[in-house]
Image (cartoon, rainbow, N blue to C red):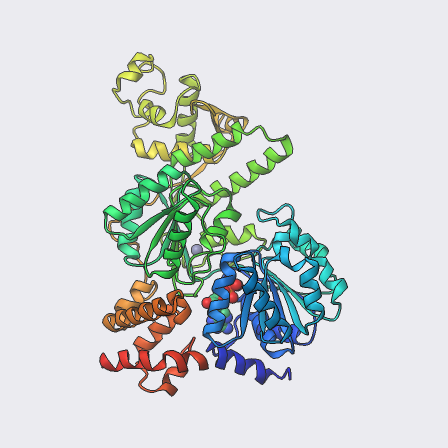
Length: 604
Ligand code: ADP
Ligand code: ZN
């Protein structure tokens, strides 16, 4: 039964894919053979197939434990579309519907059953399972068992009962959170001592990382969207509710279909916006970090940050929502002096215990280090996760346009002694004005027109000095007063002031008017412009949307963009030809083949 042919044919005929990705095949074979597994794979890596294919091939029903109710429904819908017998049990169902599904379970009518963890541990449900042949248990988002993680779910702590109660049934735990402590907690609390460990690299090669020096964040965002992602889906993260609303309004006024999402909105409004984001093509969601968990939309083409995320880990998770379908996507952020100062202020203000504060400090340093790096951004990110990446990825801003660094020792000395001479009370904008010898009335009033640092900075303009101050704050030589934002010197500034230490600074690239140089075909826009009939693609998108509406499912559940692109490139004329494309399995061919073939023929 477990011959390689079998799982390959399921991959092709049910899911419509030609080959396994990464370690999928190994994992599937391991679970098929009855082994337990812990699977660590980045978002979009293809974790679901690792349990879905064994679920179809092993006798009995596979029970999938998932904490995200909204996602459950989407996953079940998507499985039904490819002809898999799937159902879910959670609190959104009426008691009657629940009973009907439970009956179906005992009658063996499902290959996959999704349940919430709190339901799994109930006596009633466990008794139901006692009466049912079980193919396997899949524990999705397994990091929820970790008390130290950001998604702790107490109910996950009860899942060790599975092993005791059903010792023969293989268990596969899956997560995209990879750090060592979490991994150990998962193995321990899920009681998986002998599980095969399958760790995939955390790189997301199709995501392009970029951080631009902030001038006017919202205007820069608008230019970014107009330039590179016109008409595409994306997520824009902002720190505050107010900023979310203002940004969504600005985008809408400038012709970008955008919706706000934050915790201050009613639950109904949030649900509606989330549904629209999932079900419509090309919407931009402007959101606080309240948005994102449980969003499994594969065609999010960009994630933009107008404010700094909480940590590098949070950034990686948030940006990981882009490009799950493997097509080119952007992770873009604007970052400036205010962001660096704000985040330093937050740490100063924190009254957390010393040890906690030290950890926060380290996390912030890592984040600011990412923003200020002159190295490959991907390399910085991956090293945070313990990987040893190559020095350059070729798909981030610093690889594409190497950042010049310069000997900023003298500039740093001027900037720091200017802080000292003005009494360690002023913010960067004022300090920059003093260095360039501005005739601002405030400077005269404060008596700073005559100090030794006044006007000594003509090698840089105001923006240049702001950049120096930003980097000194980011690097920790300057502290930001938590109340009024004034800068003061820290101990690490001393060696520089005394000339005992050289300082290298990055020269912020001057933004070009056009989009950065990148090979055509690198972005989705590029693919579409260069090699394929845009009109046909749009026509295919339109039938997809109409079909999705009629069936009440998100468009990507009908076909992914990748499949539409292949259709427009290859113009299949027969069902056989169509069935060779990625994402076209038996069931979808049967259901939608004719509709899409007709559109292709009409555009001949
Ligand atoms: P994860 O759960 O790891 O975030 P998913 O299981 O949702 O990822 O898979 C991400 C996307 O990749 C899905 O759209 C899925 O259909 C697609 N995918 C998974 N495995 C393959 C494969 N072997 N070939 C092509 N596409 C795949
Ligand atoms: Zn790079």
